[in-house]
Each structure stands twice: as structure tokens, then as C-alpha cells.
Length: 434
Image (cartoon, rainbow, N blue to C red; front, side, top):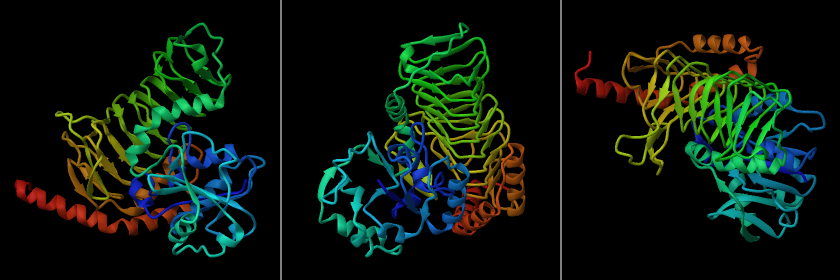
């Protein structure tokens, strides 16, 4: 079936982790929504409606990651919907199971708590849709359908992905229906062997423990795991990742090509994250090309066990959860011994130089922190060049399109930076800081 995934008007609520990518590319479980849809409907024509400034880099990413037989997507081209009946899906949808073909008709629409999750539209209906009021018109069409309850939930804030990750990992594992325990006597398996999958192309050194007692563990191809690592499920380690003497607790997704050491608990590392050294990362989401310096540590629980409020784009939002770590945007770097407070939000291309104190809980994009003080005087050109060098070290390229995206984000986040800087100056003055 043809399908089309769209970002609705609340996509910005998933900042900072969705600043540089569509919301349906965010990870929960093994993968994001787009890859699930491609597994459901292999080789089907598909399209996407994304925020305009993401269209160029997203098309580039899709072209670079496409496998044989996958068609190129129609990005921000609504005429794609005019050719045939198309399943339209909200990009924030995280389903608990596959859509059944008998559900997807022109008579039904799937809703979650009154919000549209999916709906099939005919070419005639699609011709009234446009980019400006796409969502409103789509909801108007849906109002004439029989509403049925869609499975899963719609992600509204970054912590929704983290708090649901463990359950989604378990569902993803059992959906695949494949288990393979390595024929290596030096690998200690705890729990049921059928809850463990280790690719034959993975390399696991002696004295590694894989604990599937509380959930399944899957280890993809070309993964390397050093001795004295312990991995507890539910957990997924993606292709090309390296784990160095790690203590990985359940509810963790380690994305492709990550370098991970130290302690990680119930976190999502999207891909190409470098956390080689010791330090605790808990209940957090870390975007690509983030480098966490040695002993970088996140707090994920307040001393009084109360619900954590998170400063998303400067506004404190009550998560309703007692365990919330940090949400860190693309290409952010932290120096040795960085200490993040509970419920911290860090934008893209931030630079953190600690000074022996807890860091600000709100670090906007393109800001720098030095000796505990927030600043915005790090040159944009230096940040872009640093990103280029970091990617080259992994044989990747900061393309001209990606560079244009980050320059656009620099402009878009200017007000957030200025507001945060003014607030930081006001607080410093009240403390009598020099």
C-alpha cells in the first residue's frame, strides 16, 4: 500500500531532538516510524510532508540510506497523493502493532485520544489538501469517517520516547521472530536463550554477560563488544556499534556506529554518538554526532523524588515523571567531567566546558558554557568546521545541504538564545557574580 507520513503542528514540541530531523525519524525501540512503515509495506511508493527547512537534507538522507528495491520518497510533493488511494500517517505515531489491512479502508480513521493517527484518502479527497492547512483539511476529511482506536500512542515530548523505549524494544524483538545465541562458550547468557539474538557477524570478547532475564537483547551485525561488558534487556545494539567495558541496563537503544563505554540506563543513543569513557547516562535521548567527554554524567532523579520539569525551548514543562535525564541535540560536545542536572535540554551544536558545578538545565542551540556560565560567543563557523572534522573522522561528510540546515537553525533559534542569555545575566546579577 502507498503511504505518506506527515509532521503535524506539534512537531516543534519534540525539540531539541527533532530540530535536525523529521519527528518520524526519532527512535523508539529499534527504529523510527518510517523504517517500521517500510517493513510493513516493502517496496511501496511513499512520501512525506516535513518542515520546509528539513526537506533538502531529508531527501539527501533517504537517498544515502535507501536499500535495493526501495523507491525514492516524494518529499513535500502533495501531488503524490493524487495518483491512488494512500495511507496517510501522523509522524508522531508509535504503534504497538501492525495495521491490519482490513482496517485501512476509506470508511475508517485511526485516532488516539481524539488525535488522528492514520487514515486512507482517495485521489479525489487528496486534491483539496495543501501544505498551508494540510492538517486542518485532513481532520475535516477524517470527521466524516468512522473513528476507531489506533494502537500505541502519539509522542508529544522527548521523554515519551525514552519512557516507552523498553516496551517497544520487547515488541520489536518479538515482531522479528528470530533468535540466535552465539556458539561461543565465553559469552555468558542469563535468561531464556530464545530472548537473545546475536548476529553471526558480531564480535564478542570473553567475559561478556548478556542478561535477558527482564527482556530480550539483540545485537546486530558488525558490533564489537569488549570484555567485562554487561548488557541487560530489553536492549538493542545496532549495526557497527562498539561497546567498551560498558554496563548497559534495560530500556536502552544503542544506534548505528555508536562508541559506548561506562554506564547507560534506559536511554536512546540515536547513532554516531561517542560516549567512550566512564560516566553515567540515564533516561536520556542523545542525537547523532554528540561527543560526551570523560566522566560526563547525567542526573535523572531529583533528591525529593518529585516529578521533573524540563526546559524545552526555554519553557519549563512538567514531564509527570520522576526519572528524566537529558535531551541533547546534534553535534553538541561536552568536555571532561560535565555534570548535567535532572531534566536538562541541550540544543544543537552547543559546546559545554564545565567548571566544577552543575550545568545550566537549559542550554540553547549554538550556545557555549564555560565555568558554569552560559554564553553565545562561540563562532558559528568554528562549530560547523568542528562538525565537519568530527564526521570526516568517521568517513562521513557534512554536506552543503546539512551545512545550510544548521545555518537555518542558527537563525531560527536566535530568540531562544537571546532570552536564555538575558535570564542568565539576570540571575548572575542577583547572585552578585562578576
